[in-house]
Image (cartoon, rainbow, N blue to C red; front, side):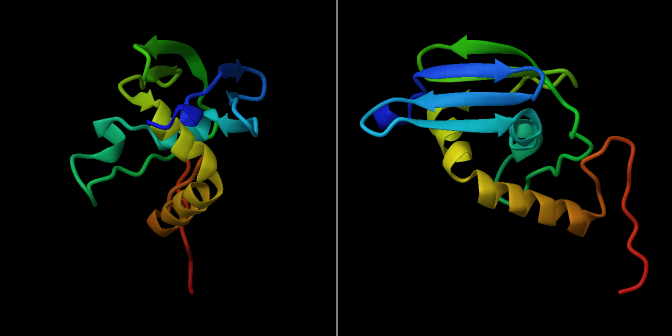
Length: 131
């Protein structure tokens, strides 16, 4: 594990639903990750499945919030979301990956949602008429 990939500070901004990760080192960086983004990219088996291609698309999570952040040893945090999900352990390496690849991962997620006819909003389904 690269020591520069360990956050020096983690702060949750409840009003904006952003988890702010600060990284020290020679070139300090700060990343703001929306709760929804973290929820739909949870490292849990419930989301990731049990192997490549077994991922479970999460939808209807636009308004999800983080209720609690629990440190796990010196290597991860467990995020408790208000929809009851709390089984993913976000390692420092995975949080850093989510930070630096946020734009690409988010666009991929939005494309998969559209392809599946699902929505970020709860209790909403998208129906495409004609092509």
